[in-house]
Image (cartoon, rainbow, N blue to C red; front, side):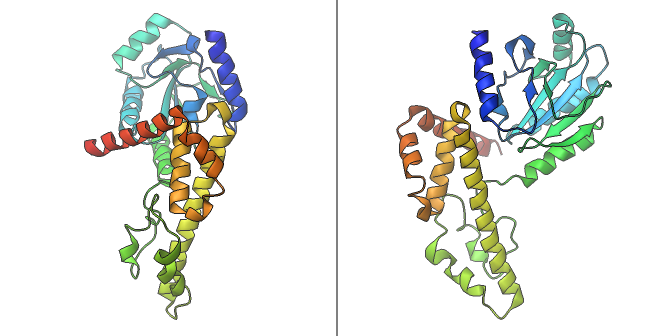
Length: 285
């Protein structure tokens, strides 16, 4: 069974484009928390906390666990990577003492991240596989995580970053999953020729935001398709459904992919599971 799992991870590593390579995510290195695969790391912000059970890391590990729970509703993964001598009993005792629920592994590492002989040591990898922070400051590490989450394109209100004055009525109308082509944008396009500079700027900002959102979604769809066997079919179906609903002119382009996914039980169930998880998060707020 282990050989099968490792073979699957090898296949995934060929399909998923990270700037570096993840090592150590096999069962032999797992201690506790959720077991991870490369699929779980796709399009996620990842923070790795390197620690040693022989060193008092209670303050840092408590902070790490708090961050793990606090950002669980975001596309964020935290891995506690034990870098000391492998000692199952000692490591598990430390995990229990620090009440860790995050994934804990022995020696997981990202090859593009810098190495450090001093623990605790943290690094943060963004959704493109770029290391955006590395060092010993836990506050700077979580700041990098928060900034990366903030910078991610979030499906929903397509113009959330635009300051609206003339077009305030469009705030809840221009959203992912609602048609944004045709009559809805006619007043906005007309305002591009307005004699008032502020109106022209606002109209252009709306058009630019919508185009950026579409480009981001198209790129995510292509990444998911390129992942092959490692693709999350539920997310792929969700993304394509969003795109063809929001921009109906693209239906023919995704017709075959959409039709195939609608016949795939795994895709249907995966999409439903995602929406169910969002409803649960909304109830907790």
